[in-house]
Image (cartoon, rainbow, N blue to C red; front, side):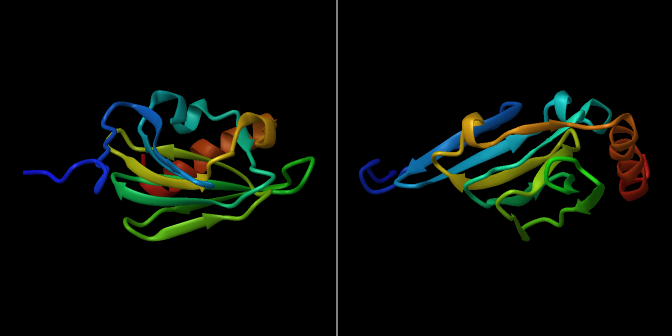
Length: 142
C-alpha cells in the first residue's frame, strides 16, 4: 500500500520532451527525454538563464551538453559528453544546449521562476551549427 500523497509525492515522465514534475518554493525538478528537435543537426541556437544556474543529471542514454563562450556573440563552443548520475551545473549566464540519444532521459533542476522572459536564446553562425554535428560525431562516433 502506498502512503498518502500528503506524505509522498511520486511523479514520472516517459513521454518525449521536457516536463516539470515538482515545483516547490523557489525550485523545480523536471525530466527531459529525447525529442527530434534536440538532434545535433536540428540545433540552431543556445539558451542562457540570466538569474540562475541549471543542473543536469543523465539518467539513461547519452547526452552531450554544448556550452558557448561569449556574451553577445558566441565565440567558442564546448561539448561535454555527460556521464550517468554525475551532476553538471551550468552557471548562470552561460549559453547552452544539448543533444540526446533516442533512449536518453535527463533530470533537470532549476529555479521555479526560470522562464523565457529571463532565459534568452541566441542564434548561431552556420559554422557553429556545423560544430554541433561534428562534435557529436567525434564523441559518439555517429
